[in-house]
Length: 553
Image 1 (cartoon, one colour):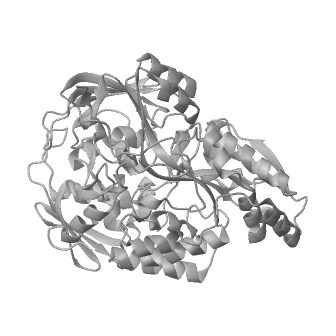
Image 2 (tube, helix red, strand yellow; image 1 turned 90 degrees about the horizontal axis):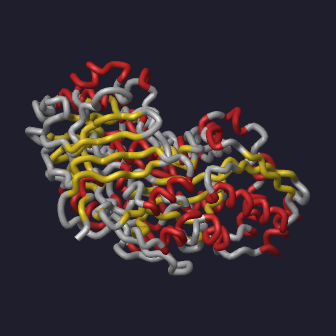
């Protein structure tokens, strides 16, 4: 499966990061999946123990009138069909809900669908909850689901999630509260994506009434614990508690999201109490926030890896890629570029992405991967063997954040030590996004930093990016054997069988260094002393996290 990226993209992550990532009966198999998927609680960084991972912050003691939240960019729209970036989804996850739900533990559970069943390999049946009210006052029916998923499939909408539906042949109403999805072929990934923005359901009448203005003005006609309130362009978005919510009532009466694009200003706002909390803390601020007496910095599973991608020019030779990988000081980058909040890796996927795999399969996926320690002698020998000594390479850098700028610098330093002439090309933050979407913007650039996060807890979400023609396959890699493995993994309904195939994909990609992996990067969240309850994992992109936030004990 290919899809738009979920990666480090621009001054606003599209701002900074962008997302360009068998059940039968009453979710019986899904219940098994939920029981075994997700990161272990309290997992710690194996490199230096400077941070620990958790699935959440202490539970709230009670309600709170309101709280404020820092986001690094203003969303261009809150239309769920183009909700592929951090700012949009951080807000939208509290307003719009999906057929299934990703939990803070990165497991999947029922959402607006009370039950999902898979009567045959190419059919998914979603039985909907009764009595779910939308913010526009209407009650959810199967017609709303058909319309919502249809908007994702409509090529005129240019939906960011369109590729999730590439194997879908029909979405039909098969009962007042039942929708049936027919697939061209078995697709293990499709039902998992129904817990992301790809599976959002909104009021058909509300969306049609808004027309072209949907997502930018007025309400969103969704069903979440909050509804869209005032949008002060260039400043903030307010969400108001929806008292007609079908689920657990939100603890806060209102949430204000403030747009703070400058990392220093965002950090100062957190330290001063101007805002109560925020995700995606600037890495350069970790140390200050750890020492803060105004609140606490938490870390959780991010399903994110920091990589070097594109790999054109002399890097088209795998020996040059291996040499550069061998020369990289990954641990040094983690300390400087990620503020010590991460761990060096030579794996493209995080260990938590393999949570549903058997121990033997997980071991097979990671055993035999190269060491994270530099080996300059071997790297120099590979450069000589490839005849690449003195070769000129250009790496893009940007002032987006030190995780980008310092990684580019680390690549330059590594190349210099092994005889390569690596030059930095600075890209303005608001233009960095184009590297991921416009081939013309990559002209003259051999490589650039890419932080990729997974939207589902399945290694294939990342590994499918190297299939022939995939959206993020910037180097144009093509191998029929790899493509065939991707097809087999996609069709494998049984998680154990699927992860066995994915382990082979992992080693294929690692051996050929289709991207150069550098580090795992956890989710970060800061809460001041007046609020608690927010999850710490990347689930906040699709889980209504703000509803859990309330007063501290």
